[in-house]
Length: 277
Image 1 (cartoon, rainbow, N blue to C red):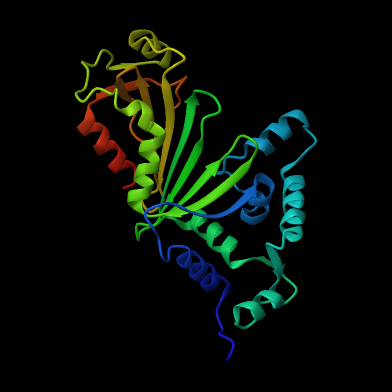
Image 2 (cartoon, one colour; image 1 turned 135 degrees about the horizontal axis):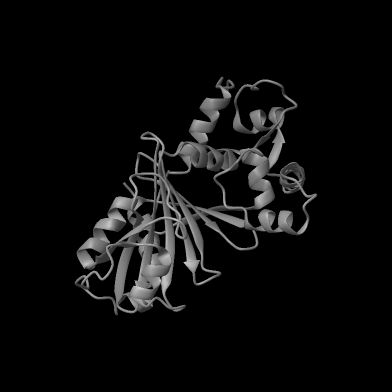
């Protein structure tokens, strides 16, 4: 068989597309990597990733740099056989060598994951503000409806899964309305008691306590170059959506005025659909 000649970018696109083949109704686990490995793959300039382990380590050890994390990640990837010299990969993938045969590149699986993280047109991040220790999830949504799910644990492990849009919607619903608690939610929106206010005022007027679920949701639409931040607040049988009162962009829970809207069943469904575009 003759070797196929492709470019580095074409290899990345083919690898990303291959991850979406044969999607089932349930998410399919692809791979788990550490903070350090993600930095080594995406580059030290990566500024969109959640890096809980690396951030905590840098707080404890100010002399520990991002470059140190990249070097550690590179060694781990090599030890695990997840990267290899270009000459080896070209032989395994039955294609011509791209550039320097000694250049170390990630496997097709990791190449596809990195490409989807970097190029998917829509990214939805769900980070619980309370309770602490809840699951942090990022959904990288592609134009064909396939979704790369990234689950990030507190100890810096990134679990990557592939799913379709319907499965991604169930993932979001499971985070915002856990099945064992969703049955108690009000079908109709309660009368809104707050129109705008700072978070402290919202907490007081809605009587928010430590048992409430508060999830920060960041939506980034790359083609439109648009970003938005909102919060999903569930207190007892009521659900509220909190958005920054100013137009567009990201908002701060502590420093910005917030618009508060009570959500009934229909509004909750509309919001879930809106998140995935």
